Length: 303
Image 1 (cartoon, rainbow, N blue to C red):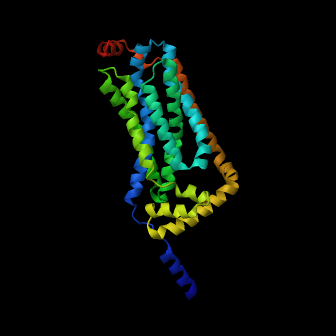
Image 2 (image 1 turned 90 degrees about the horizontal axis):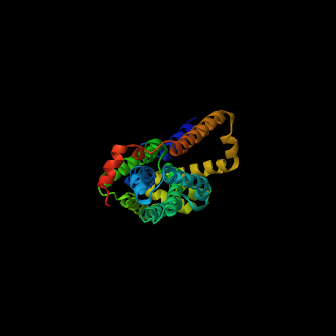
Image 3 (image 1 turned 180 degrees about the horizontal axis):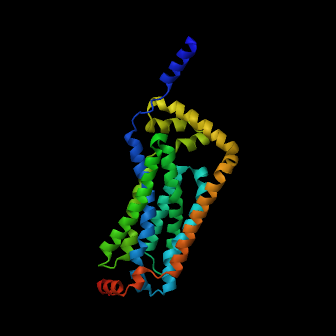
């Protein structure tokens, strides 16, 4: 009995403290990854103010307006569809860098679009980046932080998406007087460059590294993210969970207790996307249907 008590005490001493402080570098990494969410929101919202001036410059019909606005959804479908396979092959960090580069190219391509087909193509490319960022940024954050703060820090990405939409609206408002729709899109390059450059200095997901049998690299990454006593237990826990997931993830995913929540969540997401797509083709854009706003914007636009 005494030996068992001594062993239990030794185990408790060897275990990492549950209240060990979160390193400042973790918060920095979360903030950088959340820029992907910011770009998601910005690229989604900025077109609401730019479309009026695009319509005037290219003499778009109502149908073409809706195509320009909704083209981003087509790209988002491809981005989200390809991202799942790419993130396992390239890693979370590398895919965020790829998304950042795509954001840069799409922002520049949209800003310098000389024709409507070019503009639509650039919007589709922007959608690809949005589709990637929609899940890779929160995934990277979730795998980088401790479980006890995971919910709070993953929520930073959702806050960043909302912030990006607000920033897009404020940018549109600030540039309405000049009619500079090119600047509305082009300014998206700034956060995209910051994201791409800063991600080079961040480690890859320790979980992904362990899943690829790169344990030494995962240990080095955790040295930047955890206190020394937390590293070995976390690597062991990751090895155990990844080994289990690689064998029976399908069984766990489709177990009876998860079937209904999975079905409801999938149906809800599909319904929301279909509603947005339908609305974009059937509802006139506010800027186009408001005579007062259109007249005011046209008066303020350069000839």
